[in-house]
Image 1: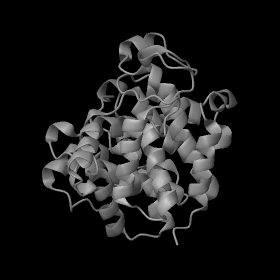
Image 2: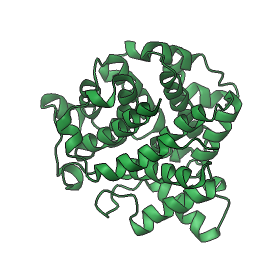
Image 3: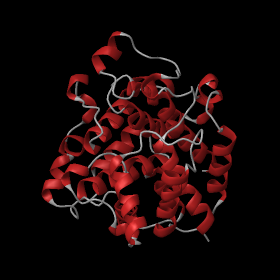
Image 4: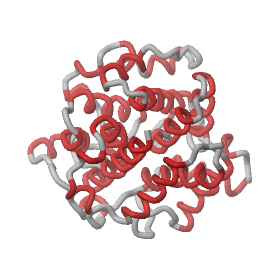
Length: 312
């Protein structure tokens, strides 16, 4: 089980790193000249190996769990604020591409000292992928903690609500969490997808469930690439991630497929990488991809501590 931590969490980082230089590039442009290796500069003029807000918020969450041995919403929010305002948990002491909905929630938390799970936006227009991109550690925590289904649901909803409190965001986070949990228990990707589709989602309202109809009521892998969107809208992001994974035979293929969809390539790359790492394993990630990651030992230390934490 311990190795699966490094597999998924480092896979996530590598997926984001691969996608950052390509953010907002068009699919048409990328399909004409696909990117098949790690590159630097690009959209944010970053050094090769730089990770962004998805990894920063994920490791802030992990650092909080490591320190508290529980999921402490207030401490997580404080660490999010340390990232936004003091550039902690960053690759090179710089914050860039900070999700706007996340930023608003952090500001609200700091200004009003509110309960952090009351700070997330409930607006239908704020259902971007900003809570989905930091939910991966909760799947590990929930599994190790042996939480019951209703406990997993409640935890995911609360963690999402720190920044994103709309049902569509919470349901997307829950779908991703359950898919990851099935993989971590040894299911192959097809079985994990089938089992995820069979999870009870009736606690979400009908309109929310309808948003995920293609993912949960059909076989997303049967869709053509032109039917898959790769925007920052959480439904599009989740569909793109699972669609790519179901098409891919190895880690490199999954990441190349994800980032060449264009659009929000950093988050789609990260979420794809997290799952692909679990499926294919850290040892099967190209060494030249692993070697360029900035502050890699720092990340590995945090992830190793997380893997050893038994939450007693």
